Amino acid sequence: MFAQKHLLDLESYTAAQILEILDTAESFRRVLDRPIPKVPVLRAKTITNLFFEPSTRTRISFELAEKRLSADVVNFSASGSSVAKGETLRDTAENILAMKVDMIVMRHPDSGAARYLSERVPASVINAGDGMHEHPTQGLLDMMTMRQKLGSLEGKKVTIVGDIAHSRVARSNVWGLNKLGARVTVCGPPPMMPLDIESLGCTVEYDFGRAIEDADAVNVLRIQLERQENQIFPGNREYARAYRLDDRMLARTKPGCIIMHPGPMNRDVEISSAVADGDRQVILEQVTNGVAVRMAVLYLLSGGVRESLGQDL
Amino acid sequence: MQIREKSQLLDSADMNRALARIAHEVIERNHGTDDVVLIGIQRRGVSLARDVQRAITRIEGTDVPLGTLDITFYRDDLSTMGPAPSVGSTDLPFDINDKTVVLVDDVLYTGRTVRAAMNELMDYGRARAIQLAVLIDRGHRELPIRADYVGKNVPTSRREVIKVMVEDFDETRKVVLGELLDDESGEGDKA
Image (cartoon, rainbow over all chains, first blue to last red):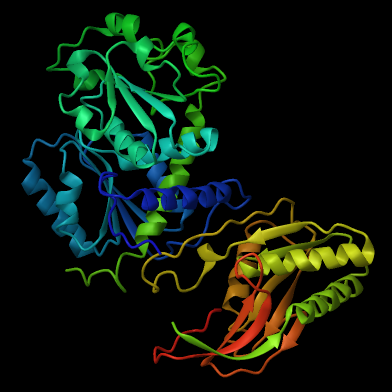
């Protein structure tokens, strides 16, 4: 039994819950290979995808997962949130209440938005990325891919490189990987490294070569040019010189080390084309696993924690 | 859910005899084992399907393909049961199109598990036929489903519970008849 109603972050999930999601995702992964890749699990459930930030792949991945589970899907895209967070979300929450939606998948530019929503609607809330806080389903699909390739994550060295400060992907990975017993090293230029990051339980390394020494997996983050407005960003060429993953750097990792990227890639900025197309990358497998892991999350949360939704109000 | 054991229905040797007879019947009904595949329903049906597979090998000298089916995604009570149940694995290492599928489960009760299993199989392809083998048929069907091969028919009341124990999951191998002790009218251990 999986008695959780929301997925807001991996920080508050236990190792056992994370493993149950990953195991369930493997079952759904096999469903995706069938002639009829669809199961009647969420028939008559209505799911709203509420995206306050532009997103293509995460939204498509969730939408596909929902349809593979036979749910009814409604998409809301609200671009450019100039309205204050509290008011927008409260209005939205009331609209959703009126429409009797069972589950809400939300991406929002503000950290904590998913929790805020979860406290105000009777529906299950799944965080599809909130500000610089977490992107739990990305963390889960990364762990699913690592587990498929490396077996148990206990004691494995995972290096995350990029703009750690702005990365909710990094934060979800650090929380989840720590719970599963992996050793996490984060790496990036000092302006992109948050001050408190060691407190999450990871090693900070500014030198890329040292950071990936003997790594079992390297997660290369996208340099998000759109998030660099107020940052002292060294520029693509400067960044690439110190932090681009290319064949020379790859040689320093462990044999069999896998290369991940959450996409979309800036080829030859954070990752060389040779590595992006090489035999160590598992980037497209991550995409397929993303659908399976989201199916698992939606399925496991759909039962809620009590007899029926709504009693929580 | 407290259960009081009332009597033992089958011991391990009885189970072997029943499963060996089922194996003979499967071979006889299908005129051999060409295009026959066995699929055990998770969890205890899987162990029993393996036993039937071994018995067929002993009798015919052929290895019948064996798969496993977890019916969780096809349950008809998912939306009303509260927290989501854990999912076992479905592993069908063969194409079921034009095969004769023999589904194997431990207890046939309401028929809802078998309904779910058949719906799931339809999503894997179009079998030529689906047959059903169960170790125990305890009655109380809620759907128009019957078994093709039955180890033992056991008339029961709804308050009673049939427990099939196999070495994979229980420390022993036998079938017992029990009775629910608390007042919550459970469904027994089989849907």
